[in-house]
Length: 141
Image: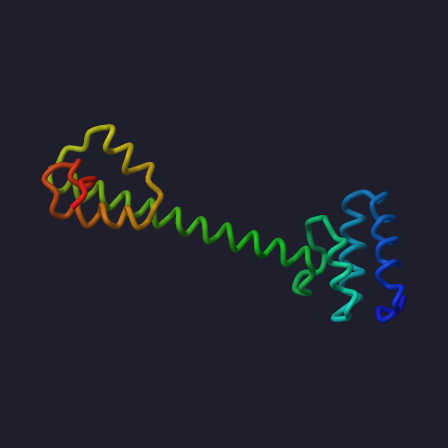
């Protein structure tokens, strides 16, 4: 198939419909194989719109499967980093209050440990440095 052919989109549509009869692993392999073969031709974008499975057999080739996987991985890493930062701030707030001898009622501890907003946790940490009670973290100044 010449990728410059005006019939290429129709041909790719027929190929995609035919691949729906394959088992998932075989379909993923041949979908990606075709995408790699199309290289940077105009119909590669057409083919990418027809692909709807996930996985990659050609790492490093920039296929739709690979990009989707990497985007998901990056989003997961960013989410994990944010969760880690929130957990660290929660731990610091509780540690400061404990080191300063301030008792932390269970409801207050729950409110602190369930918060995931970094700006709020930063504000509470700052307030923990001068608070006289744990509830002082939540007062509006």
